[in-house]
Image 1 (tube, rainbow, N blue to C red):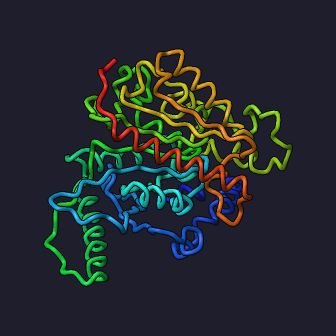
Image 2 (cartoon, rainbow, N blue to C red; image 1 turned 135 degrees about the horizontal axis):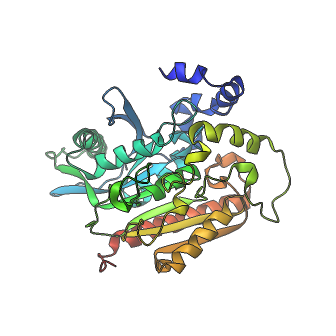
Length: 377
């Protein structure tokens, strides 16, 4: 069925999709070079809302967990790669996800969500929502399986550490995911999905209910602030790449990528649906649709056509009384996507800026998870 949908596309869509998706053919063994510190992910096929389909998720767990005395309850970050909803892969997220895992002791889950032109909006969001449900909701289909596999991997790591130390392996302790400490992260189109996780919106047919008709999977009673890391997110998909505002200092270059985006972005998201807040979360009413516990950290690049969308959204947050719930770091001289480039591609200033952004993101997560619940607005 997937191949049938692909070959039903115009030839121009077919060959350009095949070209930009070539990096997805890289084997996982490439992580030995792109993410040498590890840990490296294992893949869990989670059940979806469709009985015939599973959602591949790339799971990172720390190899250095302390031996639990009673119960080990691990925080979780749900991560979404970028790529305009038509390319990209969780493998490109590995250095970032691995660092979060090492520094926070968290389980990081990078979602291999559906994309165009084979699948259409809102399938990427539905996959993201299903995985978040598997983290949070005991009644969700993937809830038990996700915990079973993660507990198995953590126990394996603990056993290997004890064996190396020459100590006897203690009996298994309970290992679970801490549903009070859950964050989301995303890059570019993945930032769109990350912000979506803390929105409640009308259904696609706007006549069907109000903002709570399509609720966030984070319950209103969520105990702690929900950290959202949004790196140079696409917040208004009504704008095709070639139509976005160009920063003054952005050098003129090849228009190949913007032309590809203009062609392939609508293969996932038709322009007549782009004004819906699920498609363009920057258009959501932050007073009525944004979770009261959402705390957003924006990372923006000076030389990026998406930066103006982030600045506009930040202004909206302040205008609607949510200015204290958003922090922004804008990096001078940086281009879109620089934090996810392979290490060997980065110049010294780009590497320093990336490292600074990642460290601030880690501190942001720590601060949110330490905070107690505030009074509801």
